[in-house]
Length: 403
Image (cartoon, rainbow, N blue to C red; front, side):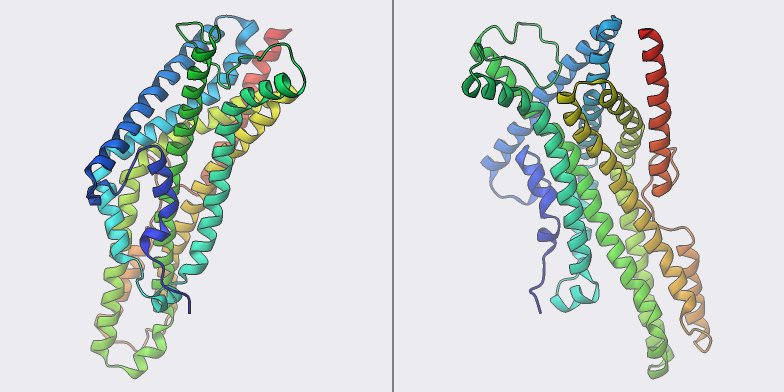
């Protein structure tokens, strides 16, 4: 039998990603004061640089909108602004709900199956395998997008200058940002500005990515617990024939307490992530629309970058909706499992307790954003539908003005 996994190993990926930008979710446990100070400095300086870049993007966007000749450039900046806003807001939500998040992680760790036997009973290896594949795909796409946009201009210029014999090294940037100075006139100014863009892009990608990875890890564990409760309820029928009514009642009471704890943890998830999810879905439709417009109107060179960006956004929305649907399904399954067991010959108190479980499961656990219905695959279809409507409107408007 394999060795038991720890909760720290289970949630390692988002924790490590956050640490690379200076955000330590377990800062309160660290005894190293200097390390905490260095990480905080990295985080604050990084977000200061990042938000200065966002302001520059907004100014560039407004200036580009003033002329029809540069409206295509404006629509190219718009998805980056939307992505930046979501990344910024996710970090703000994390800061505001830091205490709640720490309590949530502590409670998740307390409820995490500790022994190898328990983890097999909970089917942790299968759940974790799927979760890590999802995290790997999403992280690869998110970092591929930020890396492609930020590093491609320098790599292209280096190849043309040193390998193809171009007369000058073209000083271009990956993101269209307004600067109050000439960023390409001097070599050291250009490279300093360029490195600022690279770090800002990486920070945005990690802030955008890691919050969703924490959400995925939380929902994965909740689904694991809900499925375990369902299996316990379904398999309890044979057990009642061999034990006393009091023992049956105590066993069911333990499951009721566990079910209530899982529902409480699911509410923690909503209190931490609800408003960031709202902004996420509101901007996703417009971002996907603008990216789609760029794919149909840009040069072949830019199309590759925007296709990676488009794929990242589509996968990100799909992942959230998939886990939202999975949470609802696993939570509802508890009521079916409770009803399907052999409860006919059980004690009256046992039946009443079983009815409580069934009633609770009628309102399943879910991921919710304010003003949105519980997030599921229907939400994904709604976002895609809204994106296409915005895209059709933008495409028609642009074509009409061009004629």
